Figure 1 (tube, rainbow, N blue to C red):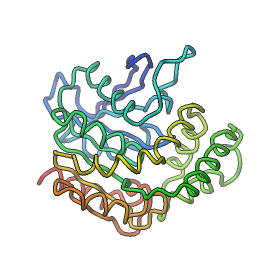
Figure 2 (cartoon, helix red, strand yellow):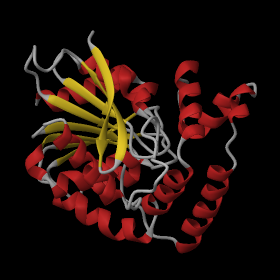
Figure 3 (cartoon, helix red, strand yellow):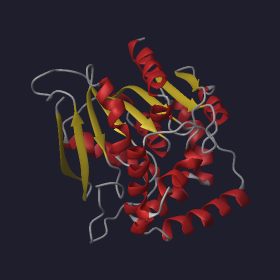
Amino acid sequence: MAQTSGKINVRGVEHYYEWIGQPREKESKPIMVFIHGWAGSTRYWRKTAQALSDRYNCLLYDLRGFGRSKLPEIPVNLSYDLEEYAEDLRGLLDALNIERTYIQSHSMGASVATLFTTMYPERVERVILTCNGIFEYDERAFTAFHRFGGYVVKFRYPWFLKVPFADQLFMARFLHRPISKIDRVAFLEDFIIADYEAALGTIYTSVSKKAVETMPQKFAEIAVPTLLISGEKDIIIPAEMGRIAAELNKNINYVSIPKTAHFPMLEDESTYLATVRDFLGS
């Protein structure tokens, strides 16, 4: 299976990206771009991309400030608003000469995908939103979440990786079913290396009064076929929040995958892929 990777400058930041599938000049297949969630990277999407690479040329990339998309020493004049991350995606597609794409996204990345899809609907064939939905605003809860998130982001050390069972403890809140140790360690590594400003900034923009007020409208505006997948046992973004979002728009098909939490693509790969393939083939 062909796999190539590189870096490309997008709006002043060197973005890491990789292709999974046949080289585009040798085989004409539609393109599917994958967007990861908060403090993650391309790595957890690889299994899904590999499984779909028979029909799609899969483009994976690390969001600005995460994974291998390191921020430059000289700051760029970009905020951590999710709309800016949607503009990053536009810049990436432009730089790679991609006019139109399928999108598969997760968690915070699904918010970016929703915004991009409503900002540039002419560039999207279909979109898959995994573990996303609509929050209700609770000032006290949001303030506590931001305070806790600030501590979590501030106190990250490489020696965490040497602590026995650290990967299991770190991922326990996100999972209902076990995933491989390789994947658990990768998540912890990505969390540790995430840029401080990007990690903290996106905590504030993802869970905010602005997001609560704007995202319902954005879900309602989606004009392309959309699949919204929830994990039945997800406590990060509960399935009910996904169901409510899907009810806002007849273009959104909603599926809750039983006995999975925040990473259904890894917790129940076969059901997740069957759900995605059914949507893409319909």
